[in-house]
Amino acid sequence: MSNDNDIILSSATSMSTLTINEVSKDGFGYNPSVGPQSNIITPEASTFLLSSKKSIITNNPNSIYDKNIINKKNLEISLSSLAFLFCEMVNWCHSNSKGIQDLETRLNGLGYQVGQRYIELIKLREGFKTNKREVKIVEILQFIHGTFWKAIFGKTANELEKSQDVLNEYMITDNVPLMSKFISIPKEYGELNCSAFMAGIIEGALDSSAFFANVTAHSVPITGYPLRTVFLIKFDDSLSIRESLRS
Amino acid sequence: MSSYYLTIIGTRDNPLYEVEFSSFKPNSSSTSSSASASSIPGRAQFAPDVREILPFIANSSLDIIDDSQWSTSNFNLGRVDSFYGLVVNAFITQGNVKFVLCYDNVGSGTNSKYDDNLIRQFFIDVNDLYVKCLLNPFYRVNDAIVSPEFDIKVKLLARKYF
Image (tube, rainbow over all chains, first blue to last red; front, side, top):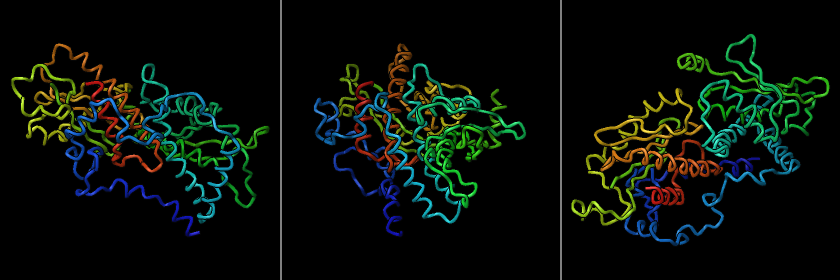
């Protein structure tokens, strides 16, 4: 098991800790320890930028920076491969977790990173002409319930409600949550809901848009929809103050 | 010929990326004044004392950006601040990452509307690059962007627009 952990722990932190002594080979690349002096335009860089041949340094043909990510075609992946991947993710989290609560937290954490990235990507795909930033709680919830859900899961969520008892609580309901479509929870796992991953996606998207919230997934089966899941979104109290100031 | 300073500011007001550049176009008006310094096309020509305080100017505009962030739903915030002839334009993404561009306003005033449009287009393209960077699983939100390719792409955009 410890080997598995070694693989997953990424070296992402080491990538951003360049020291003051590190100089880039070709004069490009920002070094945060040095500041703007690190990527100042040198004579060679200037000639390179002005020349028409661009393949001298950027010899990586598969670079993400050369791809068109706004392209709307061919964005669907097969559901079975997604289900297998998710199965493995749950399995991995399960083997590391200490309990049901811990397992849900781990799934949530995985989804969180997806949400942070997806919200930016979807906003970019929508285009800037007709588009706007979401600055109101209700508007961002509608965005997540509609566009966001459709982009990720291929359909909009079923319901969007405001809690009647508690201020700052909202609920998004999905009758057939895509990710846990093929997952049945054993009895001894009680309240576990693997849609915690989806809750994490929502939480990541809301948090990075500065709508600080806690999102949890709860199974609320009704007749015909045994997998029906309610995503309970609890916003931070500071948000209502912000809203009242600007309204 | 204007010089520009672009910085990308993360959600915790931490700088992710900085670059200084100037217009790449061959210059017609500067033959008299800065013949020696302008030998490298594209290099910023801020005075040394201005250059030192550029990050401070960018950061001092963050308060204004924070304020207008919730009162407008535009991505492009336009011209938010100016500081002794330096103009500050800003752009904010849905994920709360700010792009701040400071530039010295030499010889403008006539076509500032045109400038703002160019800057808006530039910001939109930088945002596109930023999202591509964000899609890298080894990059996390609020990490500094050290990729040389990102740097090249931003500078190419700078060359294209300014």
